[in-house]
Length: 268
Ligand SMILES: NC(=O)c1ccc[n+]([C@@H]2O[C@H](COP(=O)([O-])OP(=O)(O)OC[C@H]3O[C@@H](n4cnc5c(N)ncnc54)[C@H](OP(=O)(O)O)[C@@H]3O)[C@@H](O)[C@H]2O)c1
Image (cartoon, rainbow, N blue to C red; front, side):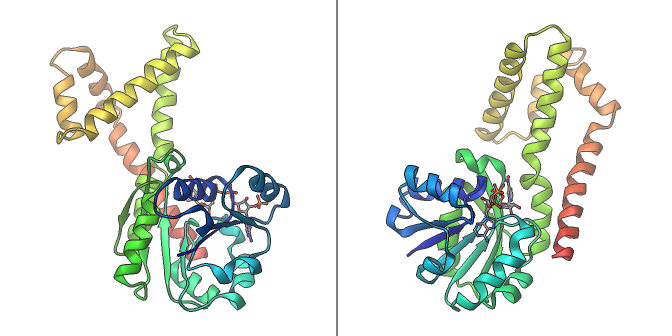
């Protein structure tokens, strides 16, 4: 099986690197293409996979085509790909808001997967949600799942609406965590800690809390109860958050991302 990754940007490269690192694909079965000659020349020097600038040289050889360009490049890319596509090829797109129907129409094929990764894919800790057109067989779906799992974990969802919803949770979610971290680091700085110490205090606290959560069956609420005793310091902080309705604000933010994903889908 040969995989072609179109777009050697942040995400395309993260998947290409993860694919060759995993046992899922050998080097000579991975091709990567980008429009920028500078980028491809650099990649040829440093990478072990086949690098192309011209899609006609690689597309016909690919069984799975992984599209990782920005959504605003999709029309132009589809127009270039359409005359070269064959009906057996499977397209996996990670372009935000680009719907299955628009890919099927734009590319003239039926086997299409719409996936939504997140940033930690770049360090092998990503979460990719995905859904597929009915024409993708069960066996092909399991291959797709294995491919997506090389950058972390994947979750198969039933509908594109679920993909838009997952955008509001896992897709955009890392930024919510960074927002929280940033706020805590600013508080630490105001309390007099150095930039270095603020980073260590906050980064390690997040790392530890996440590990506790992932390694136990206890819910976040359960952990909060365990750490906050009546009249104590943590209770004071949690009460302040409750009084300011932070929970509702976070929910609103997640819905803002979900709604924007729906809007982008309609535009596409
Ligand atoms: N970054 C994330 O966390 C994240 C999360 C979820 C989904 N996504 C999706 O992932 C996709 C890629 O994002 P990114 O951050 O990796 O973007 P990026 O860094 O801009 O990478 C896209 C690459 O594709 C190249 N390209 C453009 N048109 C092309 C074409 N026709 N053929 C081959 N290559 C082409 C671009 O070249 P130029 O720079 O020369 O245009 C660029 O090198 C986006 O659709 C985004 O919605 C990203």
